[in-house]
Amino acid sequence: DYSPPPVTVPGKDPFAGGPGVIAGQVMNGTAGAATPEGITVTLIAFEAGPQVKMVGTLSTTVQSDGSFRFADLDPEAQVAYVVTTEYRGVNYGSDAVQLSPNQPQSAITLTVYETTDQADVIRFDRVHIFADFPASDRLRIGELYVISNTGDRTYVGSLQIPLPEGATDLRFERGTAAGRFTETDEGFIDTAPVLPGEGTTELLFSYALTYRDGLVITRRFLYPVNTLNLLVPDVGVTVESEQLGAPAPVPMQEEVVYNYSTGPLTPGQEVSWRMKGKPQPATVTTATEETGRRPGPTDRQALGLGLIGLALGVVAAYLIWQGWSPRRALAQARAASDRQALLEAIADLDDAYEAGELDEATYRRERSELVEELIERMQTP
Image (cartoon, rainbow, N blue to C red; front, side, top):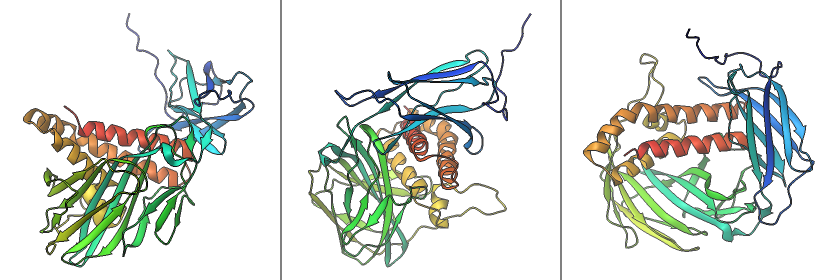
């Protein structure tokens, strides 16, 4: 006789008792460093749904061999678990795991690192600079950096980010930790730790410039840059530069964006371009109460809710168009709803963090995974 498999149950308290066990190991990812002992690790349970919600925590002390164990968990609770800790002043989080009646036990590895303030481990894998013209005499520049750490120690120094001359109204992505940024005479400082690995940190910010025909913009980067992409909408403005490549059209849902690329760049190298022409801002349709539709990337820009949707949308569209083919176009059409869902999930995660429902380590890790998944969807073959 057929009997349905045991299923998890939403709303159940994961800490109410049961046969569930999550055991794990804290590892030190720095070569030659000792395994941490005596530090506190915290198990956090999250309930999935329209918004990520933290439903409870448990804490324990790591043994001398780096091991830890959380028992008496209810495997029927419909939650995901992560383990977090603080080591050398830096927060670390594990991958998420789930339990079920069929698999009531799971293992977690939590990797921590020693620290360094030597900036030679920092590399900007990708720098995406995108332009928007909210008015004919006003230019808003958004910049999205994907940052890597090539060493085996977490970088805890400050990233120095110079801004172009005349930049005003500096804004940072919503959901970033309080106190992370400090403005300076030349730009700002980012104090977020950069964990070892590829693309472990993102930086998204924007600023305003007074626009005039013939405006020259110069960007200087104090760290190596693998690839720089300048993305400009097709609104009657052209770009002239001896350093940037020829423009490549990137079709978007509502407009065409032109991409100008260069790289690699060495530390301290400058990139300049001249913008010519009078912008004719495109008409943007915003969400209304009648439609009941959640604002998409372009809507977010128009509503002043942040540039993350626009940034990811433009960058992802560029990645798609680099390898466009009819077969790709069909796959992209099928995946369109998934991409919108990912954008909304990123926004929901930002909201949850701002509301204090997520700790910083979990927020940063989950958000990075969502962004990576979004970009992967945009590159669907």
